[in-house]
Length: 392
Image (cartoon, rainbow, N blue to C red; front, side, top):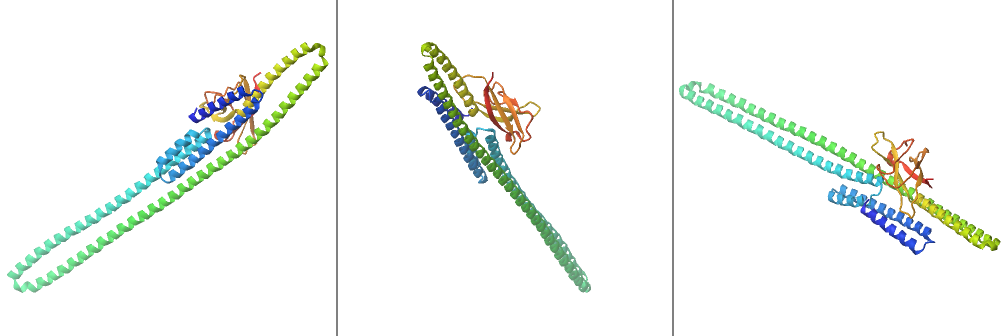
């Protein structure tokens, strides 16, 4: 049991005992008021839980994950139902998804940086190759110049032909250098275009993924808000029904008490000579009525205070089971809890009886198979108490 719930349960038990000792005739009414207070405390916990969930989701969107974890820790302390735990798990999954998205963005930026470095290395390599080629060409030119000088010294008459040959070679060399330079620049432009295309394609993929993640997050938030609103409406209707039922039961109890008192007065007037016998019989009847009243009050307290829910246990067959908790109350009776299970929007109602119910929830406590199995998910099955009766 969570510390907050344990504290509230202990406080409620202390209040019940003090009320019983202070004013026994008004015990039933005070117990009703105290159970109303317990329901109000549950509503406050639900408000605290939802506020913590909303703050945690806001921190996650702001990338303040330490804030998210802190708010989820607060929400975990106020989570009292399976639905609350499911909402808490969804909020934790949002943190994991946001961290994964940030890591993916970092990875893409690293890939782009590596691509830029690779392009720079390729330009440097081409420039080095070009410089090496020009150096070799200069060496060849130097050799040709030396040969020219030798030929001029040995044969003056071939000078004109040699000069023409050199000019032709220089023109070819210039054309070759110009062609190499054009090809190098064309290759660099092609590399730049391919890199730009890859970068634009990556940016488009990132934008699409971001839009999809935002749409999914908005859809999850809307679904959670709708589900919580429906639960609050159901809880308000249940409280109104219980208030009407308590008022009706109080009227019936008053009528029964008035009838008993009238019968007792008439009997005393008609049997003056048998007063002692009449008093003895009246005492026996009063004790019996008190016992029946105590038993009835206990059954009614259980009917109003027992909380049932649907769950699944590791039975290997996937059956749905009813389990739940019972409030603390004065008395020790064996009870059978009558309930009905229904899916939202369905007209199919599954009725059942939890025999010898002791209020120990979970798969290792009170479990009663729902047969036939409802058609909706187990966390959507609504289980309501319809009656509580003695085991006899």
